[in-house]
Image (tube, rainbow, N blue to C red; front, side, top):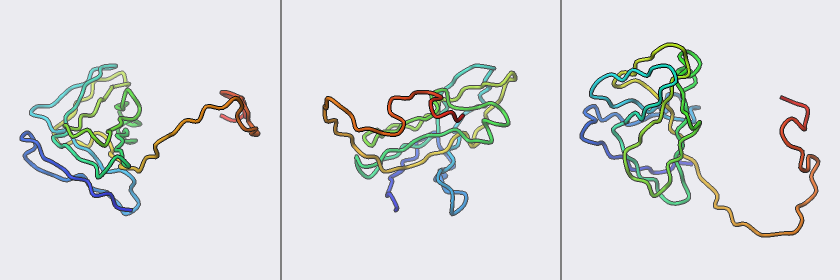
Amino acid sequence: MIAEVKIKFLETNKEKNIPFYATPGSAGMDLTACLAQDVTLQPLERRLIPTGIAIQLPSADFAAFIFARSGLASKHGITLPNCVGVIDSDYTGELMVSLINLSREAYTIKHGERIAQLVVMEVAKAKFNVVDELGVTERGDGGFGSTGHF
């Protein structure tokens, strides 16, 4: 399935590079930092990093999600403090990436560096039905660790 997503380049984005899939099997497109000057994240510091782009999703049936780049997280401890950023279909402002440095060393983010992944997905709207009882399942109300597997 293809979702037609509109993209707007902000004045700060001189290169006007459209995010793209690196391989045919890629689920996410790399987002890059759009910076006037390098940003150094100290250990445990959080910062919002601009991307220089805004998008408009085709309808309320879609949302965009910002995920950490696995290489940046595993090699340098740079990840998202909220784990996943959610871009609602009606948000048309600049995409900003909240990053945190979980390492013990400072890390410098440079203009154009790949900082996160953007995934566009269809979303289902939930309709809640109030009931007195829920159906029986094998797991039931067993919580964390109840299946014996970690």
